[in-house]
Image 1 (cartoon, rainbow, N blue to C red):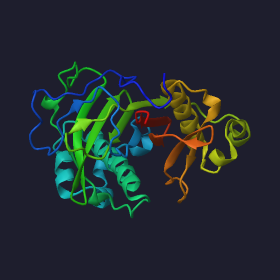
Image 2: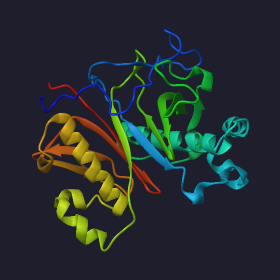
Image 3: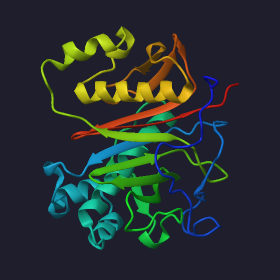
Image 4: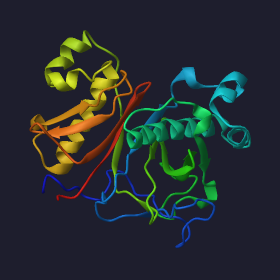
Length: 284
């Protein structure tokens, strides 16, 4: 495979179309049709977030008024409260905000001040799930929505598989297409021994300065492997470096043999889960 191209197929089952052959109403610019070829004529600015629903520290947040008021708008709180599964509805919206923050950060070049209520999430109703085999009862549950910020509506895709809740956002396109990104998540084990000593040999100096803690390191290792496999590259020649910025907020940049690749990458981790999503532009 040409190193500058990527297959449009995803490593997950596809649940990407509306019930209707027309664009979904009430969601401007989001037609939910999946592109079949790589599309990077303009940047997509992918953002993603993973939530570990099995993490006991994140249960019962729907009863914490101060948390709700700090993170969610009144409308979002009403949507959460009226859901048959309010805990999951809460974390779906949290993940959408976190993913959209990464998309906005990329589009601006640096992260803005993160005020959660400035990112308003709206989710398509369950009866508007994908007709490609996605229903409210068949795992994984896949939904679409949007995140409004600064007058821009960022498309959102959510997948819930077991205890893994994964969200991906991207910059809207004029044709409403969903970019054919690859995304995946993985559960990791407990720390054994000195993780820094164990993992340091697997990173170049430029990569290691981007690592803030063990999940950060492991997410980079998994994403690097996925990118190398997708592009037909030797993993040893691929690096995931990062732009300048605060630890944990630095935007990842993919390199091959010392040269930046046209790959849009986003990383996330939470609890015992790692996640990543990426998209490559066609060879120019």
